[in-house]
Image (cartoon, rainbow, N blue to C red; front, side):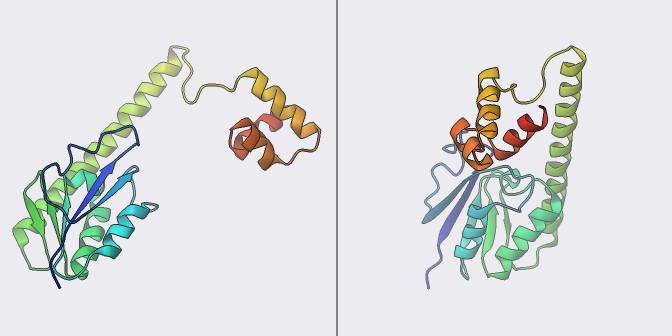
Length: 185
């Protein structure tokens, strides 16, 4: 069995560019995910990537924050990869984590993971502060309000007995939005 070099690339949204991550590395297979790393739950591409790995494979990730944003998730992912006999290599940090015991690498990973978690929490705090400042200035915060004509169509279709799921689909909104509009009557 030959060792494979596998890449995992993650961006938070589909508009972001993945090209800079792992550029120039000769990889046998690359998994690309467009999703927040806030949690490892609901990251199907990451799960597919881990399932794909075999004994001796090397998983390349651009940086620790591309894999996880909190220390527990980071440790859990690395443990899963190592349990399969594969290693994780963070290119930016020049760190490798394998099943071999390396206390220095472990300490470094925990410190960097803690900083990634700290950074995530600071981002959330700044975001909340910005939203509070915008509200205080009388600005709308959140998604833009639905146009009046869409609200009118939702109410009209509901009064005609059209199923909520169909209304949502036809008006290109979520069912939750349909229920919220109808509740505001």
